[in-house]
Amino acid sequence: MNEVIVEDIIKDILLTEEEIEAKVKELGKQITEDYKGKNLMLVGILKGAVIFMADLAKSIKIPVLIDFMAVSSYGNSSTSTGIVRIIKDLDCSIEDKDILIVEDIIDTGLTLSYLTDNLKKRGAKSVKICTLLDKPDRRKAEVPVDYRGFIIPDEFVVGYGLDYAEQYRNLPYIAALKEEVYS
Ligand SMILES: O=P(O)(O)OC[C@H]1O[C@H](OP(=O)(O)OP(=O)(O)O)[C@H](O)[C@@H]1O
Ligand code: HPA
Ligand SMILES: [Mg+2]
Image 1 (spheres, rainbow, N blue to C red):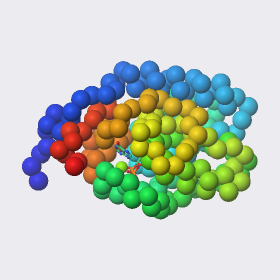
Image 2 (image 1 turned 180 degrees about the vertical axis):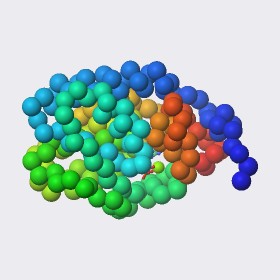
Image 3 (image 1 turned 135 degrees about the horizontal axis):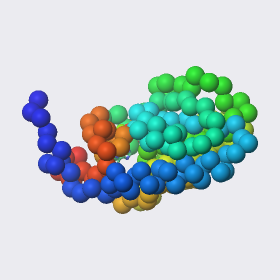
Protein backbone atom coordinates (compact mmCIF):
# COMPACT_ATOMS: atom_id res chain seq x y z
CA MET A 1 0.00 0.00 0.00
CA ASN A 2 1.29 3.47 -0.83
CA GLU A 3 1.84 5.71 2.15
CA VAL A 4 -0.93 8.29 2.51
CA ILE A 5 0.22 11.80 3.36
CA VAL A 6 -2.06 13.20 6.07
CA GLU A 7 -2.30 16.64 4.44
CA ASP A 8 -3.80 15.00 1.32
CA ILE A 9 -6.85 13.64 3.12
CA ILE A 10 -7.57 16.51 5.51
CA LYS A 11 -9.91 19.35 4.58
CA ASP A 12 -9.24 21.49 7.64
CA ILE A 13 -8.24 21.29 11.28
CA LEU A 14 -11.36 21.83 13.41
CA LEU A 15 -9.73 21.68 16.84
CA THR A 16 -6.08 22.18 17.65
CA GLU A 17 -4.10 20.28 20.25
CA GLU A 18 -4.15 23.36 22.51
CA GLU A 19 -7.92 23.82 22.23
CA ILE A 20 -8.50 20.16 23.08
CA GLU A 21 -6.12 20.27 26.03
CA ALA A 22 -7.82 23.34 27.52
CA LYS A 23 -11.28 21.81 27.12
CA VAL A 24 -10.26 18.47 28.67
CA LYS A 25 -8.89 20.30 31.74
CA GLU A 26 -12.13 22.28 32.06
CA LEU A 27 -14.23 19.08 31.86
CA GLY A 28 -11.98 17.38 34.41
CA LYS A 29 -12.37 20.28 36.83
CA GLN A 30 -16.16 20.22 36.53
CA ILE A 31 -16.31 16.43 36.98
CA THR A 32 -14.00 16.67 40.02
CA GLU A 33 -16.41 19.13 41.66
CA ASP A 34 -19.58 17.26 40.71
CA TYR A 35 -18.42 13.81 41.85
CA LYS A 36 -16.84 14.69 45.23
CA GLY A 37 -17.96 12.04 47.77
CA LYS A 38 -19.39 9.80 45.04
CA ASN A 39 -18.31 6.43 43.69
CA LEU A 40 -17.06 7.57 40.27
CA MET A 41 -16.33 4.97 37.62
CA LEU A 42 -15.29 6.07 34.15
CA VAL A 43 -16.39 3.73 31.37
CA GLY A 44 -14.50 4.42 28.16
CA ILE A 45 -15.90 3.17 24.87
CA LEU A 46 -13.18 1.54 22.79
CA LYS A 47 -11.45 2.36 20.68
CA GLY A 48 -12.30 5.95 19.85
CA ALA A 49 -12.40 7.18 23.45
CA VAL A 50 -8.99 5.91 24.62
CA ILE A 51 -7.00 9.07 24.08
CA PHE A 52 -9.68 11.35 25.51
CA MET A 53 -10.17 8.93 28.42
CA ALA A 54 -6.46 8.96 29.32
CA ASP A 55 -6.24 12.76 29.30
CA LEU A 56 -9.59 13.25 31.05
CA ALA A 57 -8.76 10.74 33.81
CA LYS A 58 -5.53 12.64 34.56
CA SER A 59 -7.43 15.89 34.86
CA ILE A 60 -9.86 14.45 37.46
CA LYS A 61 -8.51 15.00 40.98
CA ILE A 62 -10.66 12.56 42.99
CA PRO A 63 -10.36 8.73 43.14
CA VAL A 64 -11.82 7.03 40.06
CA LEU A 65 -12.26 3.51 38.79
CA ILE A 66 -11.56 2.99 35.12
CA ASP A 67 -13.06 0.34 32.86
CA PHE A 68 -13.73 -0.08 29.16
CA MET A 69 -16.36 -1.51 26.87
CA ALA A 70 -16.11 -2.12 23.17
CA VAL A 71 -19.24 -1.87 21.09
CA SER A 72 -19.48 -1.71 17.36
CA SER A 73 -21.90 0.31 15.32
CA TYR A 74 -19.76 1.45 12.41
CA GLY A 75 -17.15 -1.14 11.47
CA ASN A 76 -14.93 0.15 8.70
CA SER A 77 -17.51 2.46 7.25
CA SER A 78 -18.26 6.15 7.76
CA THR A 79 -22.02 5.65 8.15
CA SER A 80 -23.89 3.96 10.98
CA THR A 81 -25.64 0.65 10.41
CA GLY A 82 -27.74 1.19 13.54
CA ILE A 83 -26.73 -2.23 14.87
CA VAL A 84 -24.97 -2.11 18.26
CA ARG A 85 -23.00 -5.15 19.37
CA ILE A 86 -21.03 -5.61 22.65
CA ILE A 87 -17.58 -6.87 21.71
CA LYS A 88 -15.92 -6.42 25.10
CA ASP A 89 -17.88 -6.09 28.34
CA LEU A 90 -16.87 -4.45 31.63
CA ASP A 91 -14.49 -6.24 33.99
CA CYS A 92 -15.78 -4.50 37.16
CA SER A 93 -19.22 -4.67 38.78
CA ILE A 94 -21.17 -1.44 38.36
CA GLU A 95 -23.61 -1.98 41.20
CA ASP A 96 -23.81 1.19 43.33
CA LYS A 97 -21.28 2.99 41.10
CA ASP A 98 -21.74 6.45 39.65
CA ILE A 99 -20.97 5.68 36.03
CA LEU A 100 -19.67 8.31 33.68
CA ILE A 101 -19.56 7.01 30.11
CA VAL A 102 -16.65 8.58 28.24
CA GLU A 103 -17.05 8.89 24.47
CA ASP A 104 -15.09 10.59 21.74
CA ILE A 105 -18.16 11.50 19.69
CA ILE A 106 -21.95 11.34 19.65
CA ASP A 107 -23.16 11.21 16.07
CA THR A 108 -26.48 9.40 15.49
CA GLY A 109 -26.68 8.70 19.25
CA LEU A 110 -27.46 5.02 18.59
CA THR A 111 -24.37 3.71 20.42
CA LEU A 112 -24.98 5.73 23.59
CA SER A 113 -28.73 5.29 23.62
CA TYR A 114 -28.16 1.51 23.73
CA LEU A 115 -25.32 1.75 26.26
CA THR A 116 -27.01 4.02 28.79
CA ASP A 117 -30.07 1.75 28.88
CA ASN A 118 -27.86 -1.31 29.21
CA LEU A 119 -25.83 0.11 32.13
CA LYS A 120 -28.87 1.46 33.99
CA LYS A 121 -30.49 -1.99 33.87
CA ARG A 122 -27.42 -3.52 35.53
CA GLY A 123 -27.89 -1.59 38.78
CA ALA A 124 -25.60 1.41 38.45
CA LYS A 125 -26.41 4.14 40.97
CA SER A 126 -26.27 6.78 38.25
CA VAL A 127 -25.31 6.85 34.56
CA LYS A 128 -24.12 10.06 32.93
CA ILE A 129 -22.42 10.87 29.65
CA CYS A 130 -19.26 12.80 28.87
CA THR A 131 -18.42 13.27 25.20
CA LEU A 132 -15.62 15.28 23.67
CA LEU A 133 -17.52 15.91 20.44
CA ASP A 134 -21.21 16.28 19.69
CA LYS A 135 -22.48 16.23 16.07
CA PRO A 136 -26.18 17.06 16.65
CA ASP A 137 -27.18 17.34 12.96
CA ARG A 138 -27.18 13.57 12.49
CA ARG A 139 -28.96 12.54 15.69
CA LYS A 140 -31.39 9.60 15.35
CA ALA A 141 -31.76 8.76 19.06
CA GLU A 142 -31.96 11.45 21.75
CA VAL A 143 -29.31 11.07 24.45
CA PRO A 144 -28.88 13.41 27.42
CA VAL A 145 -25.34 14.81 27.29
CA ASP A 146 -24.11 15.78 30.74
CA TYR A 147 -20.58 16.90 29.82
CA ARG A 148 -19.82 18.07 26.30
CA GLY A 149 -16.51 19.29 24.90
CA PHE A 150 -17.40 20.76 21.52
CA ILE A 151 -20.35 20.87 19.14
CA ILE A 152 -19.11 20.18 15.60
CA PRO A 153 -20.71 20.47 12.15
CA ASP A 154 -21.86 17.49 10.10
CA GLU A 155 -18.47 16.43 8.75
CA PHE A 156 -16.55 13.20 9.16
CA VAL A 157 -13.70 13.89 11.58
CA VAL A 158 -10.52 12.06 12.51
CA GLY A 159 -7.76 12.39 15.09
CA TYR A 160 -7.44 12.32 18.91
CA GLY A 161 -8.80 8.76 18.91
CA LEU A 162 -11.25 9.08 16.03
CA ASP A 163 -10.58 6.96 12.96
CA TYR A 164 -11.46 6.54 9.36
CA ALA A 165 -11.08 2.83 8.49
CA GLU A 166 -8.93 2.44 11.66
CA GLN A 167 -6.46 5.11 10.56
CA TYR A 168 -5.54 8.57 11.88
CA ARG A 169 -6.42 7.92 15.55
CA ASN A 170 -2.96 9.15 16.57
CA LEU A 171 -3.28 12.66 15.13
CA PRO A 172 -3.01 15.06 18.10
CA TYR A 173 -5.66 17.41 16.62
CA ILE A 174 -9.17 16.86 15.22
CA ALA A 175 -9.61 17.36 11.50
CA ALA A 176 -12.39 17.08 8.94
CA LEU A 177 -11.74 14.56 6.16
CA LYS A 178 -12.02 15.64 2.55
CA GLU A 179 -15.37 14.39 1.25
CA GLU A 180 -13.76 12.51 -1.64
CA VAL A 181 -11.92 10.31 0.89
CA TYR A 182 -15.07 8.78 2.36
CA SER A 183 -17.83 9.29 -0.21
O1 LIG B 1 -23.50 8.19 17.85
P1 LIG B 1 -23.14 7.07 16.93
O2 LIG B 1 -23.67 7.29 15.54
O3 LIG B 1 -23.53 5.73 17.46
O4 LIG B 1 -21.56 7.10 16.71
C1 LIG B 1 -20.62 7.27 17.72
C2 LIG B 1 -19.78 6.03 17.92
O5 LIG B 1 -19.14 5.64 16.70
C3 LIG B 1 -17.73 5.59 16.87
O6 LIG B 1 -17.28 4.32 17.24
P2 LIG B 1 -16.99 3.13 16.20
O7 LIG B 1 -18.16 2.21 16.18
O8 LIG B 1 -16.53 3.71 14.90
O9 LIG B 1 -15.80 2.36 16.89
P3 LIG B 1 -14.34 2.92 17.26
O10 LIG B 1 -14.52 3.78 18.49
O11 LIG B 1 -13.55 1.70 17.54
O12 LIG B 1 -13.84 3.72 16.09
C4 LIG B 1 -17.48 6.55 18.02
O13 LIG B 1 -16.29 6.26 18.69
C5 LIG B 1 -18.68 6.35 18.91
O14 LIG B 1 -18.52 5.26 19.78
O1 HPA C 1 -17.09 11.83 12.38
C1 HPA C 1 -16.72 10.71 12.83
N1 HPA C 1 -15.41 10.32 12.76
C2 HPA C 1 -14.97 9.11 13.22
N2 HPA C 1 -15.77 8.22 13.79
C3 HPA C 1 -17.08 8.55 13.90
N3 HPA C 1 -18.08 7.84 14.43
C4 HPA C 1 -19.18 8.58 14.32
N4 HPA C 1 -18.92 9.76 13.71
C5 HPA C 1 -17.59 9.77 13.44
MG1 LIG D 1 -14.68 4.28 14.34
